[in-house]
Image (tube, rainbow, N blue to C red; front, side, top):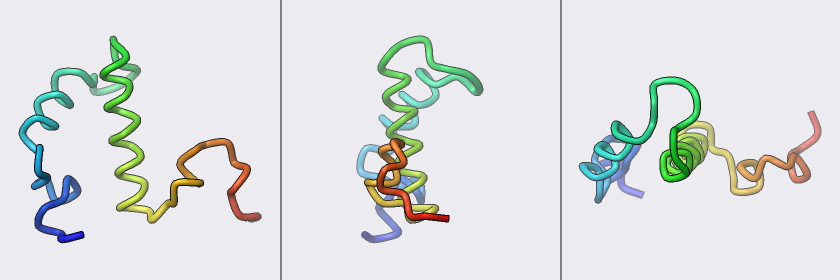
Length: 70
């Protein structure tokens, strides 16, 4: 993935729409007021975890069944 066209670098294909909906639907703290805001929050968190922390899909499921032993 090119670093120039990612949401991580704030230059994704639909960046303007993403920024608008993020600002409109997601509060600075706490849960969103509607399911669309919650969905965007979860998807944004998953994207951040994948591209910042390198987590795989299994890690992002949250059920801890596929997590390696510590």
